[in-house]
Amino acid sequence: MSKFYFDSSPSPTPSPPPSHHHLNNNNNEEDSDDDNNPSTLPFPTPLSRDAFSNLEAPFNPTQFLASLRSRHQTLEDLRAELRARSKELERELVELVNRDYVDFVGLGGSLKGGGGRVVDLRMAKNLLTLSYRLDELSTLLLIHPPSSSSSTTTTTAVVSIPNFDDQEGESSSGGGESSTPSIPRLSRILLGYLFVTRNLLPKLPLQHPFVKMQIPRIEAVRKTLLLDLDSALKEARSSKDSDKVLVLLGFYADLDAEAEGVRALKEGGKVGK
Image (cartoon, rainbow, N blue to C red; front, side, top):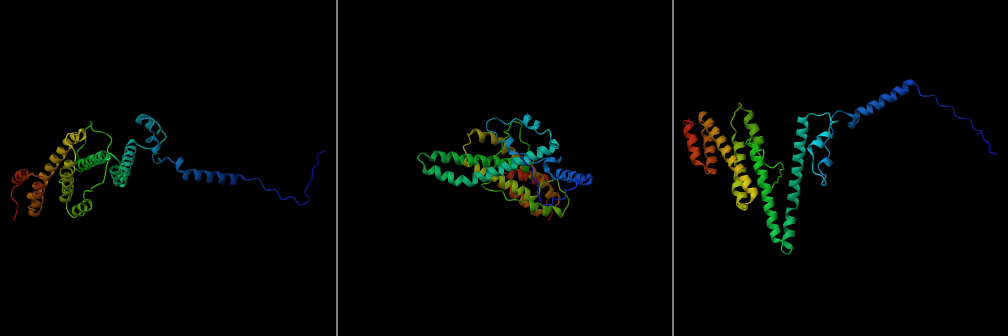
């Protein structure tokens, strides 16, 4: 038969039931915690890579947008975030290619029959560089790519074009606004174009399908650059800036376009002494 035993020690005083005011405080604390929880806020969290890293199924834009129905975000903000993510992936690809390029070349050279692989690897890297440089030049010249161009763009950072953005900002801050590109900006574009035409193209077979697709883009960059040089030269002539005129004529010479420079010079009037 079971027995009940009572403790001889005095029982503790029972705690009073929580008051209504205390419950309200707890609720307020929970609400405050919810407000500080990023998952409960209306601001969108950074996009996860899982939606783009599924190798078993191709990426479906419609399904991806449908999965974002609970995000409080405009399409323009989403587009900007996707562009930023694309740039981040491009930078990672650049770091990966540049980090392992020497190791890959050394490994290919040490293996039997690896010489052909080394050549293919070098060509692939040059093609990546060509694509990136043309993308950069098109952006600087505000050339919109054709709709039929590939949507996948890769980058590399083998040789970087000097960045004149800071110098350009300092030089333009002291004067009035101008619709023509500044000398530093034109110099940056010119260096990029010369790197493509004199350094990259000689290393690539002109009959390669990808190279053939880039030739019209190279011609468009040259044509647009010459138009910008014409505008800058005419402005320099009208403002009687002899030093700037000489610099711009040097740019024409670098492009082997002295005739175009002389023509623009004649159309701009006489330089003041």
